[in-house]
Amino acid sequence: MSYHGTFAFRTDIGKVRKDNEDKAQVAMNSNGEVLLIVCDGMGGASKGDLASKMAIESLVESFKNKKKYILLGNEKRWFTKAAKKANAAIYEMAEKEPSCKGMGTTVVAALISGNRLITATVGDSRCYMLKKKNELVQLTHDQTYVNYLVSTGKISEEESLSHPDRHVLMNALGIYPSLSLTFTSHEYNGESILCCSDGLYNQIPHRELQNIMSTDDRSDQKVDALISVANFNGGSDNIAAALWECITND
Image 1: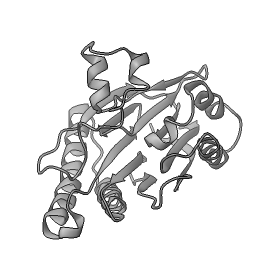
Image 2 (image 1 turned 45 degrees about the vertical axis):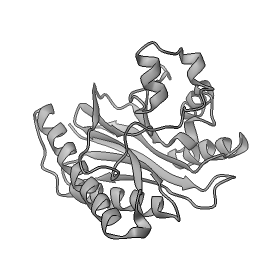
Image 3 (image 1 turned 180 degrees about the vertical axis):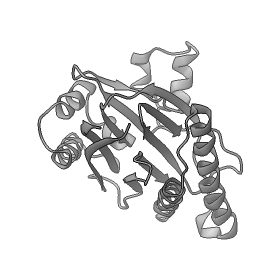
């Protein structure tokens, strides 16, 4: 089974930052698969921009050359291999070039392959699914110190919203020679999929995010609306969004 749909992706510098280190892309390959990627770069002197650019380019190249797998385990192995390749390239660049030292990026990627959706996460960029009854569900788990505190019962969800360390990452691409990915897998039946950076979801309440995703606007109009609202609400960070919406299936 392959799906037909529309997609849009866009980044914005926001209202506060001097550089835009976010990257977003949606790609399709010859197998009829769809890949959404959002990267939120980090590192001084715009090197976060380089890290996120390298990650996107490497992952899309791997995706274009990807075989079609029947088994879920093979999809996860492909994801791991592709992410490790990107991680090695960024890490080696940072080791070789003193100006790039410490650069890295978050990655959230969503792969639609037939009736399966697989997400892979490094860091705190997120993937959401809009269910059939217009219920927006977060599919990924933030790899942050605060999320760790919540999951271990040290603090509550409510306390996490204002915790001083809420932006501290537990994981990022390119920072270390080794890499660990977090996967989720889901049945896919043509739902809308959104990947975004924290510059989007931290500026828009969940219900408002859900309302914008549920409109009858075109995909590009929805992405523009999401970025406009995030900026209206403060735009305190770079903003990235990648949206896929299914039209019909074979």
